[in-house]
Structure formats: structure tokens, C-alpha cells
Length: 110
View 1 (cartoon, rainbow, N blue to C red):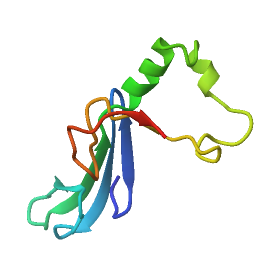
View 2 (tube, rainbow, N blue to C red; view 1 turned 180 degrees about the horizontal axis):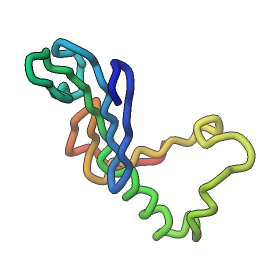
View 3 (cartoon, helix red, strand yellow; view 1 turned 180 degrees about the vertical axis):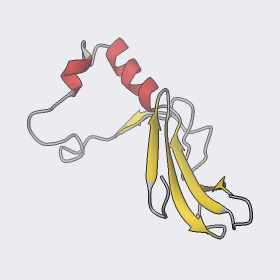
View 4 (cartoon, one colour; view 1 turned 120 degrees about the vertical axis):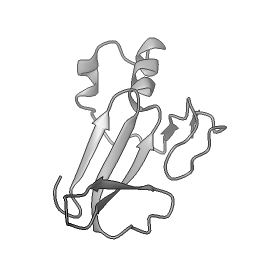
């Protein structure tokens, strides 16, 4: 990631997005501004970060309660997506991160 708009996503227990914003501290709303790097004699390059606390942890939880048995089952789905069928899962096992930052939020199916 070297130019404004380039992004990287890290998946693990959580999922975190880091996006290069360019020179000058970005106005990010509820995302986190950070310095990506600064070379000697040059202005700082900023990035913004947002995350989901329980991305991979939610997938593991779904396996443990029997929603699927093997990871290969997650490779493709037949029919419309869950959101098109009116199903939403909020994986807030540890609260909600960006953009809400609410540690008291709870997971739910809608």
C-alpha cells in the first residue's frame, strides 16, 4: 500500500482495514487516523483504520454450534445471499468496533 486509496485487510480473530489516506491528517468520522509512515525530510503519510473485533472468532463459533462442519462448506453458497433473504448476523461477541465503538453491544441475528 503506497498511494492514497490503497488498502490492506488483516483477518484473524478480528478483521482490520488499513487504508492509505495521503498527506495531511484525514477527517475520518468514526475511523481511526494514524501515521502510516514518514520519510526523512518529507511530510507524514496518513492512513485510516477500522475493524471488526470478532470476524474469525464468529466463523469458529458458527462451526462449534454446528452451522457447518468443514471450512470447505464456506467456499460457495447456492441461492441468494443471506442478506437478500433478510438474514443479518452481527458478530459482536466483544462489542462493536468501527464505526460504533460500543463494547456493550451484543451479537444478534436479525
